[in-house]
Amino acid sequence: MQYHAPSKCPVCGQTMKVTRLHCEHCSTELTGSFTPCRFCLLEEKHMQFVEVFLRCRGSIKEVEKALGVSYPTVRNMMDSALTALGLNDKQQSGETEDERRESILTKLKNHEIDVDAAVEELRKLKGE
Image (cartoon, rainbow, N blue to C red):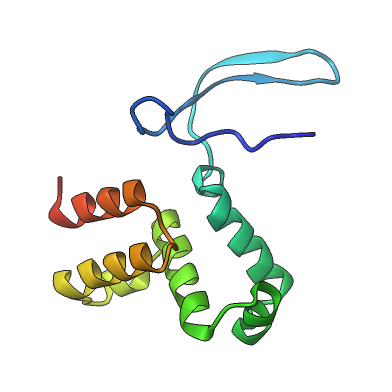
């Protein structure tokens, strides 16, 4: 069984760096400071959503059925995954700070993000 590498430090919550790579076939090892791809940094819940979304070929109705959730919940999950990937167009398209704050709190209320993620997003919103 393979496990998803943690992207956040379990102690302080900061982003972790990959510092060692190993080839199981020939035992070659590389050490250094490697930046993982943006998908590697996703939390498991976002990875699962992206996988379901792709399997459903982008059909929100199919995602609703597959996950047994409502359309607004799928949209919120999508927005959360896009934000985690740094691709949330709403932020770039003029969504006000109040609207963004409300969106974060709604995701928290709907258990789509945890308290730590909400605090992190609110801090980013304030520019901390």
